[in-house]
Length: 285
Image 1: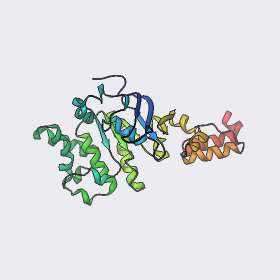
Image 2: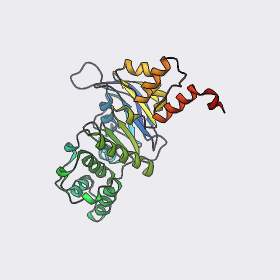
Image 3: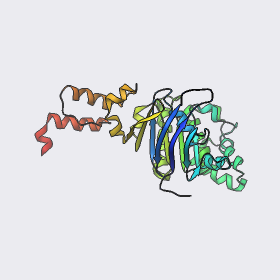
Image 4: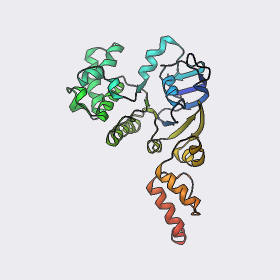
């Protein structure tokens, strides 16, 4: 079922059993095919709850979540939804189920009942896509954290998903591991057109997205491009969230009277703005 909207969150609220207050309240958003959407929020904001709703791990208390045309409330469609929308979790060790990398990638395919003659090329293709094919016969426990996450991504890719949902998939990795995983996901988004929902607390990661949602106290507080969202520096800080380093520095310079536009994200952006401010005549020519 191909639609213009890949994921449609329709006035969704969710309350955990035994809780009097909703974890999410009246969330409304649409995600288009091929988008890279980052979701930000402080601990307890509801962003991980939202991620699990998008994968039918949770069912809304109110409202509907429609993934690739399928309503998550329909129990008969759960496996179809999870095949189309694969999920990567925070701890790579919790996602490894086999003692050999290629067998781990095969696990999801076996659950789907894919014939073995079809599984082999899918496994090879998935491992190649995440640059892990030379580790196909390795033991997962011998891999780095970033490599384990790439194996987890391969397991999802083998099922040929339309969407990847990553719930703080880089939170437990060192900087090199974070870069490995994020570079892999961005490559898959660009080259294969896979829609990505990237839940993170790293602002520099969110700055690379097409669109950012900021969740606080169970509601979407801000949404827009990274430049638009991070342009609200005071609002982000009120929500106990940071902004990218260059955005924070630009804000400090602006408060000191330098004419720098909102929404600066990178070193290059800031350098251009400072040059304009210091050399207005040169910039004009």
